[in-house]
Amino acid sequence: MLRLLLVGAVGGAFSALFGVGGGVVMVPLLMLLCGYGSRAATATSLAAIAMIAAAGVATYGALGEVDWLAALLIGIPALLGVTLGVKVRARISAVAISRALAVLLLIAAALLVVHPA
Image 1 (cartoon, rainbow, N blue to C red):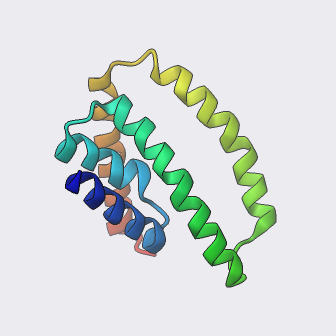
Image 2 (cartoon, rainbow, N blue to C red):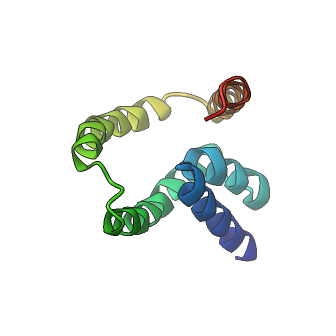
Image 3 (cartoon, one colour):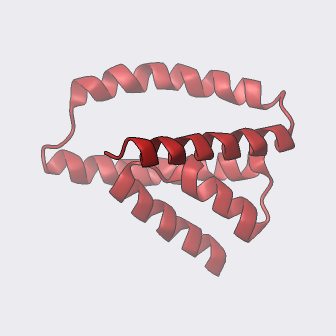
């Protein structure tokens, strides 16, 4: 239980600081620290992110930082994308998903080194 609390705290902090927390932070930590399989880690992370996102939207919204039109234009297609992604993921092995996530994280890290914000 302590490890899950740690994963949540780290994921929430990264989400607030960098806009990432689920796939980039929580999924790998759930797999490494808590022994979750990639599918269970992803599903659990998505459930946790719903709560984190709600708190983030409320806080940033109260500060006037949310571009609501952009959020809708991103969010509506994202709903379709997540539905498709879950269906595709069900057909791909856990090892392939883990490797794809590792490659994605390496590419993101390299891009941040080359083009820092």
